[in-house]
Length: 177
Image 1 (spheres, helix red, strand yellow):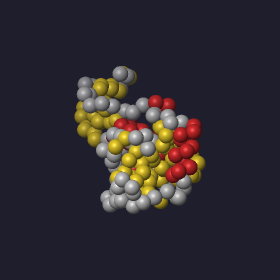
Image 2 (tube, one colour):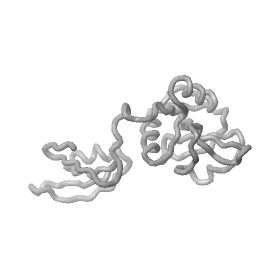
Image 3 (tube, helix red, strand yellow):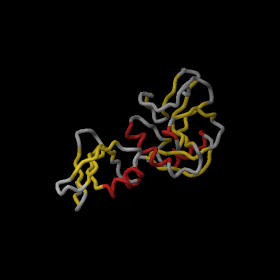
Image 4 (spheres, helix red, strand yellow):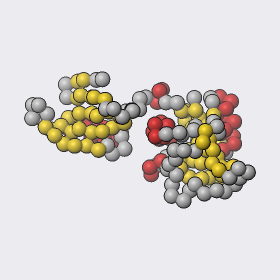
């Protein structure tokens, strides 16, 4: 990985996770970018103060499997937009997908962004429009209830939890590339 005068990065065995050793001047920048990494204070070989942090390194926005669309649309219009111009509305199947979606949502102009998660009254379950089962989830407490004409939107603040919203509300949305 990268090695500079006062910075050493080493990968750990966990996917998309790295241990980063930074001097105190650099860790402030990391703490502002990441969501409160776990850090341990220590001393370097030259007795300089060092901080060891566990941080997730996801890559750049260009590497993301998602793209944010900063237009306000209903869920159905967002679905057709994504299918016409990209692949589909975003499916979040694991923590890594959630991290990418959070990165995209930071630039949204609405408090919520539509995801490709919909509730079907006929079959009585939530499903991803890209034809995936709902296994990983980040629901806000009490929000994964069954109601017709509901789809999921992710709040762009406060832990980026998912909320059920009526399909006719208008939000920005995240498409899968």
